[in-house]
Image 1 (cartoon, rainbow, N blue to C red):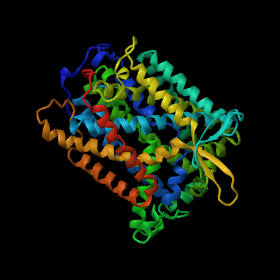
Image 2 (image 1 turned 120 degrees about the vertical axis):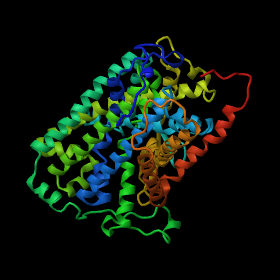
Image 3 (image 1 turned 135 degrees about the vertical axis):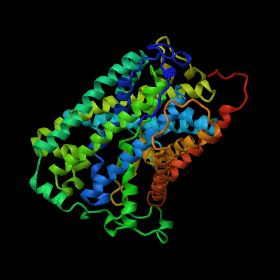
Image 4 (image 1 turned 30 degrees about the vertical axis):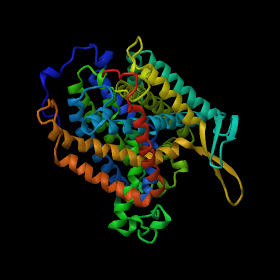
Length: 520
């Protein structure tokens, strides 16, 4: 997959990176960041929803194959940009150089506001939620501070579950301010552990959970549709123009089902680009960042496909579709070990989410650092501490992620008046999936832009399959975005609003002032 590398690309181990970073990440460390940032709790849960949307064994597996193609194609395309521009900030830098500082800022703005911090909040709460399986007192309704109503739709609260999530964010943020060596050690240990745990789930499902009836039902009729959801237009004004469909309708119905199903699977496979944020700390970035992207995404996608095979050889499709709280992996272990399976899965997911949160926290602050160096964020974030890490960026990121944990959505049942509370970051993450795809498409299109703008630039690695594979990714992603606009309208247009709100903020940050920008 890697075509050529220049010998001049090698940097001395532990040499100073750009602006004082220490180049302490090896190829193994870089790959662990890719793998660790991708594997969270999604693979253990989202297959239930995908199975309901696609309605068949073949549909469930093909949805993950599509996700795998999109993820690996994007990672291979990013490899060229990473080798060209091995700087802290990664995707922010690629967008800035491909188009203009505005586009880089809009990505960094959205990353800080929702993408990175919202995901950190979600993963931290997932850790606390599964700790609650082992310790029931850690409950989302065991209040320390009962919900304080802010408006008809929003509230603030602090439950024991929320407190554990915030303490996890504080712990990992503090540890990462102590230097890259400690952060990467945590990442390597927990990523190795959760990769083995996921592999163990696969082995247990395939070897010990084998259910002859499930295998016959699932694989004898691979494309037989059962229990498929009706997917309706995402807004009332579209109902007269866009039909409601199911996967059983074939043709257009299948296309819509696969497009909608990508929300869960793509989100579960996301964050692979986090290694590009830390390129300023990779020992040999022109070689190792592209390689780690290829190796890491290939490892995770292979494990994800095998995990779904394990689900399907253990459980009939109908049980996957109706798994309690969508916890498919827990249902698999309960089928094998009985009631003890839930506790085993809770421990595995805690290990997984702990490592995932660490990778997200470690990498995200590097983007805000790069923005601050360009004069597009608070100046203090553009400085490194005595241990050569952007500690202020880590602190700002941790504070905002903790606030997202505290914020709640407030839902009132019109029939009973009962009030329930959701998580604000969950809504924000739904809103931003569409925006994430926009930035992926723009970044990969940047390959074409930079090949034209900078034809003579050093490219130690050239994107595999260029121009066909990058173009195919762009076409597929645009098709998914079109489907989401029509069938997930309520959770796509707010994503656009979040991005566009960054435009006036950019003009405020970029106005000439007495304070000169810190040179990058």
